[in-house]
Length: 364
Image (cartoon, rainbow, N blue to C red; front, side, top):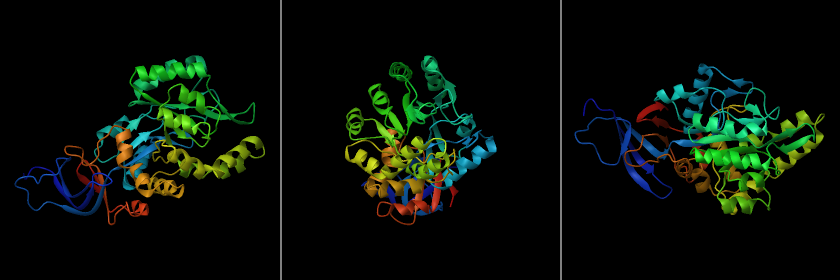
């Protein structure tokens, strides 16, 4: 055994919300609950262990101006890692970050390819900006480039109306989502406002980002179809500042953004109460800093989601939704260790004691 990489984690291993083990072993980067034969004098980590946290809306390789170089992407990924995020669903990036897959010390990434937006209806340098007739072709392209997800921009400021407006006609959306599903990819969409939601859900979309425009009319539809939301409440907290900056030119849009912000907690709580799956995402990488996963979990609790469910939204439940393993026999040894039980107080997530990735202590 002397040439094998072995690490022991002892204390309370939270394999599930109510599945608590006394210890696990990481042997050559994989989890086992059976003590390896012949092992002695191996490193031991003590504490409360969770599966590596999930940020289901994050952008590695992107900043407020567009794509960034590899050194900046690496810094972003390291910041997320050191906050406990070991699995990222990258919800749109113009940068090629495949090189990260070869780094055992960086988080694992599930990519949605590059954003697909309507011409001049999104942040400059972020997206493929196209017209509806090209939507199916671009969705197919990004479905092939991504890791099982495609990201649409479902609504944005319409300069003609001076307010948020849907970007795509219903027919094109239906055809595009059907093509993504044919190719084995799920589809998600950026949506701030109310207008686009019914068409997207009835067209078969799998997830909606932000979803601040949910109402009593569309919440039952989401629940019935099992469409998940990733509220990104730490990002929604910036709406008042955005509204102030656009007040002079787009007063209607500014008022709308303030309204969406004011009801954000009620919206998320109503969605959860209706049975809509809710997951943690920070929207890091545009104008927001990386490493905010603990803040987003705390925001979900503030919105009224029970702490254990908010924790699951970045741990057990989020990993199941994305089809990635938890702390199970044979799984990659990706876990975060804390001094206290995060089920009792989610604020514990802000202070990880050790970060273990592929069976190695990489931080803490």
